[in-house]
Length: 319
Image (cartoon, rainbow, N blue to C red; front, side):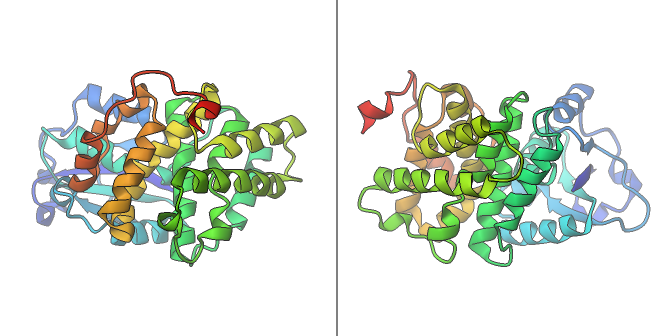
């Protein structure tokens, strides 16, 4: 679990020198804002003595979209499996430190595992345990789906700190159907009708989610609600919790998955996915995208898509 964010000015080669820190890189207001956004992480922590477990991120490579994200994720997974670890942002300047810290912490937020009152319970601990049991993390696509599920859950709590237990469980299990259909190879780009493919994915996922959660201690009405949210999550709608799930899912795609998606599928299908995902975002959630680091190619696709300015049509109208 991520414990501390350590900010280091100048070149990464000078990162071990105390003088590299110099003037604080964050203003008091920026530090407070990051602490509110990412609770549980000590922001701008002093560099501990010795060689505490940590991952280092070169801020200049990050801002230039030249960082090897696969290598970073592999290192973070290994650190997380062993316990608490630090994240060091190196090569920072004061003008961009707050933005870079926000972007990097957003991409690494799955290692925070924040909860709220609804999820800080023994029952939800069993929900998390059941979710983890389903995923063979040695399989790359399964690992990617697991990371996305945890990230959607964390985005949901950022967007609505009062999210219900049903909404949080739906965030975790919304893509569970991929364990059946796409654990070894992705097939969505082959679909003749992309929306129909996604609707079927959601319908099957709802049944799988309900079956997986049976016996963990959730009340029947909560199980029903989880199933309903998962079944509808590929279409925007007027339901507030469904809209929250769509926003969290979409933001996770852009902040965590879009770079790998582009590499896996190429630009043609990524353009389809970007347009599809933006249609699911409410305007207030889309307003967060400028603070999310995406590859330049994905940013260009986002800028090329019109904004949603009104409430979505009902599922019946869209069908």
